[in-house]
Image 1 (cartoon, helix red, strand yellow):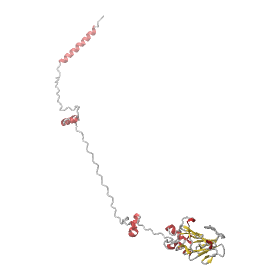
Image 2 (cartoon, helix red, strand yellow):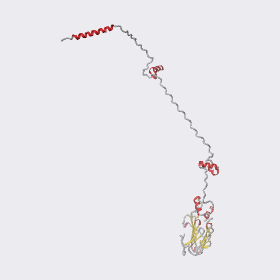
Image 3 (spheres, rainbow, N blue to C red):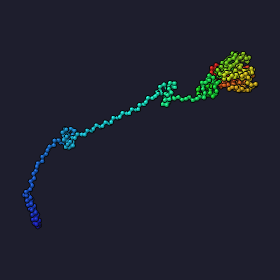
Image 4 (cartoon, rainbow, N blue to C red):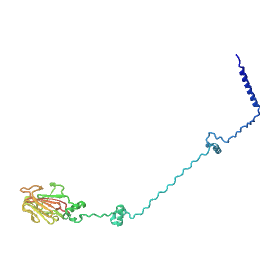
Length: 331
């Protein structure tokens, strides 16, 4: 094996050259370097501690706030600005005094208030208003004492509806039959067992009032063994305006108006001042038809809704009177 001496000579020469250069550089004069030792200054406070800055002294807080921004006083929250005071409510405008007190004396306003107060209170409160009364077609006070005979049918109807005056009273019936027995106006039913009996002779009022007059004559007969029976009826008074109607037994032959015969024979009629009289055989008898008699009936339709029916027998009469109560009536 052969060694490469060329490479060894070259490599050694290079190494010697480098060593010479280093020695030369070290022997050259150079700049002297002075090293100054570092001096450390101690800080007055350690601001990096982990305790609560609120617990620090005022000096530490001031120092650390200036050099580290810690421990600075917290900004205080300013107190909220109070709201402005509420302005007072404006007072309502003062009302001027009223010229009249419409509540004072209202119970007697028609007589007690002046015309000016009536006008003002009517306009501002609806009190004290004077309304002219409408013209009435009838004066229901005029002639009231004789309304049944003196008033027209139109006035009676109007005053009854609007003033409760002039109303036709409810009709009731009085019946006389036989010798005689009487169901009076006051009896509440037609039970004959409750009827009165009358046996006296003479002339007596059946109805007596300021408007209607009805009189009866009672006499004994041989058919009633001397006991009184109704023998004759006379109807008159103010409601007939001076007229008079008389009815007697068949034997007496009395059937007249103002003294004049109603008819010469059977069947007939008469019309007077607001009344009519008929003579026929119609109508229900209150008792029985006496033996040996034929039915003869006188019907009187009279003013004030008075109706008189006479059943005419040979020797006595049966009578029915239907009417409303009249002023001052007796019977």
